[in-house]
Image 1 (cartoon, rainbow over the protein chains, first blue to last red):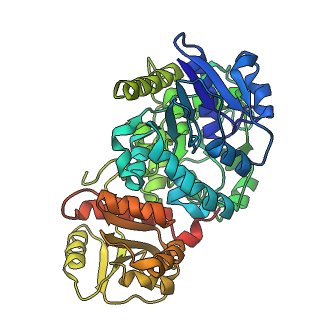
Image 2 (spheres, rainbow over the protein chains, first blue to last red):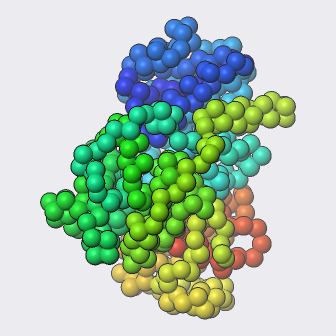
Image 3 (cartoon, one colour):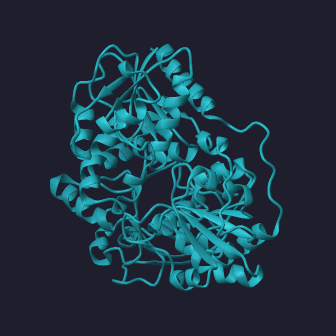
Length: 358
Length: 157
């Protein structure tokens, strides 16, 4: 099967947010299969990254251009032909697929649900082609049942074409050698992974941390996340708690350090108000850390009964749940965790069903 | 748990919510929802109008006529519009809805056709009710999630 994955959002470094990680993991997993001849559509920078993973003839370059222009070309332009499948890994599929089956991965509907989180240009320009791509794709791969439900709120006619294929913990993370984090070694700590945007709700964990510390003296809140890309919402006592060491911002950390954090955290906190999947939840469970989540359906789905879910409006309940997690035992590491080979296999199964359905 | 796990991961009634329903002359549907939600400990009022800065966490506007109140509320509270199968009339009505969308947390619609119509034409979060008579538990889950997402003006990062 000749398979073209649209990967123009993957930068030269190959690192980035959840959708970049998805694209890289799926590329590797599809390329490992004997029944797929994987090609990728990439920017010149991305070609450097994928050039270490795929033969040069499998890389199809688009010209360097601003994101909006590149997205427009991806949607309206002419793709290389001769593919059985064209797979949009982020928001869009091409309007003209030249006979190929089209697949769109729907990671979330944040652009539709919380448009104010995005810049005016992105929310104005992307909404219509995103919805059109959902209407046109032969197969829609949703990363959770919760995301499927939101997709079907907007495009009910897509129901027969939707398949749910949950993600897996990072392969690189699972393979990484744990690297101790000096700032946390010897401490009982809770781990929170996410930026300081309002949606991620870091402020709930920070504002309730004094209550947690009153019950678990010496406990530390470790915050892993990228630099701010908008207004930061860190809670009213962030600076004070960072100064006294009860909250420790670690910034971006490598796979080894993150693996160590998951392996030693007494709890992993996921207070986000809205997610499409919830990778930190899955990774926490993968490495045996107790999880506390908000009531967000995607986070609860990812926790699969292994976590404690608390409404974000219940601040006292949140603090109690974190105290309980910090005071309890770590969980058991699953014997056969889900892998990216499973994700690739289920994605291809969804494509196969679309083929058989004609 | 009286909720759809694809909408919300816990019971929507775990924490009481304060809600103001604003209706036209037809109040029965709002009164029914209010009655069920009060049983679960929610603070619910039903009125014919809304102050500019409501004390309630969520304002529910019943019907597109009443939903024009969004121009006065301007996102001062989490705002949910129960539109049913209705659509704005004519190009002016559509234009008005596109303006009011910026102060709307959710437009709740009935039926697939209404959902596709709203999603296609108005840049607003759309939620589609399950077929059949409106289920108070489903509405409760929608209101709690809207409240969790926060006022539109406060969402910006």
